[in-house]
Image 1: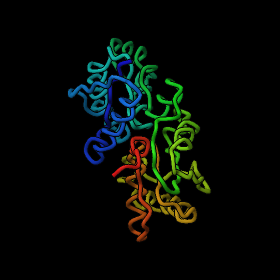
Image 2: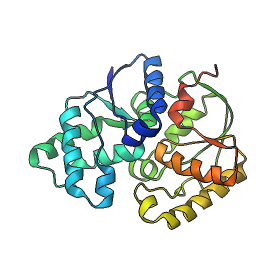
Image 3: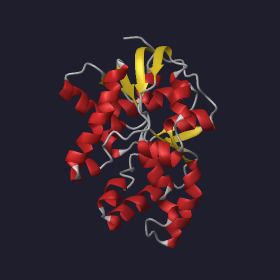
Image 4: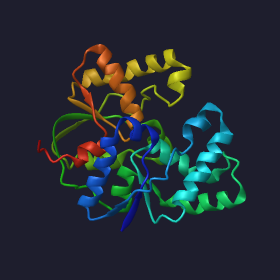
Length: 242
């Protein structure tokens, strides 16, 4: 199998090691991973901010780059949800691009869903000791139905104790540009999530979206907590070796 890797903007700019973790896990499973350097943003930030024409430009470019891909995998539920929605009519795409989007949407996968739902894999030979809590990212949970998949993978990681938060499905407050436009509300929502994390007494918080983890990490550091945030791809790529 050949997989085309789509790396979201935030991952590329702030968490490039997570992209490499995705590659390591897929290659460990014998998958041929390809990366097209022409790729750019999926258009979600522009769309959510009201710049729909700019979002259309991003969507058209994405489809130009990926329309022939056999399978596309991304370490982000929110970006995958955006791409799958290209054909829904929320973007005023020309007919040609709408048809491309319709044919492509079932070939785009969030990383953990690709492993569990498409490949039928839950064991990736990972080791990551300690108590770990999983945050359910809003877009992944509500738009893609991703809840069981990351849990199935984490439960097979050697040394890892999966701890459920008191309110797993509660938003972290990030919401992309929401955190910029409504910073005070975003922070107050995030504080609720931090209280649940501190109550759980975990070493690490993980999620399928780096954007959520960036929000959680910033708020944890403000409390002086030693709890760290790690993308699930980084956990699954870990072998417990230095």
